[in-house]
Image (cartoon, rainbow, N blue to C red; front, side):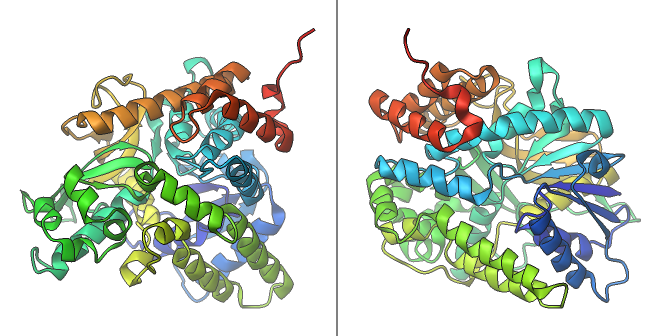
Length: 483
């Protein structure tokens, strides 16, 4: 099986390759194609993968190219993890927003609107190229803002997109569930031998046709980076209420420390970590303003050092060691300003474990290509799950994936408070999509105006004008002088 990685020079690509190397099941990926427009980054990641594969006889073949058509020709799956404008553009978005004293985070903050406006045209070009070179391929989207880009790729230009063959993924829900389950295990409230969480196989497996139903199931619903864990079912029993009763256990993992026991018990659920920007807006903004550098600027400097250091090796060994050291630092500093706002706690070892988007992608490919069913939290079409949203609006919900595709699992609708947040956020997303498709300044302003972290018309105008001034791809959104 062939897998193409768009954004193949991206820093997290080795995580995907490492998961592919560990896969020994029939029908595994045997060829990985890396595509990137940045040759320096592409060479660096290719070298990291070569060092990972050294001495492993069954490691997937790696093909690196800047030719998109070559990367896509005849591929079976496409993994899209593209950052349009690179970390420099993210740093610019965050700095502009903070200069106006608003949160600029690249998905749920105002920076997410700028990121989407830049990324949507590129995503539409990808759709056209995939249809031309790999019309039967499935696309797994990790490009942020993931819900927006997944929705755009599904719809395409004038409804002529990739439809059901696009699936959006994120590692946040799985990471949250794993940490919550770990807290329950720490308290002796659930067994320790529950198997994988959020990427577990279900249904027929193995040559004997045995079944392996996941013992853990998630009740999770919302949008990408705007969802809530409302239930955690172990062997058919919801154990989340047991966790919510125990302040001592809630404060042993990241989301519990971020949000605090009083809020979690008030909600009766555990929010995705990015909802910290909504529930603690003033505190998060104050921490961002106080930080030595916004997250984007930090990553720009950190990753720049990594890529330059690999280039300086001149092909000599050491790229993988540099990558591992940089990855650890990246995980340790993740959401540092939010943690400062919540009391300046450090991430512990469990927090440093990623949610496993690489494992989610692997499970999707195995489920579809080889009919090895799995239950995963994915970004898919709403189809009536959340009242008030259109059927084609992309939401984040548990799904069953098998050889016939993706099937959202039935869950209860959001309670009114959460539905209000999601409905407004989806309006902002859809208005941003309209702005990008029509190059409409009016719709870009409407998106910023109705974003709850902006909520001011004069401010929306000022932010948009600054974004246009700093990002050439946004020139269409400049104000036209009256004549």
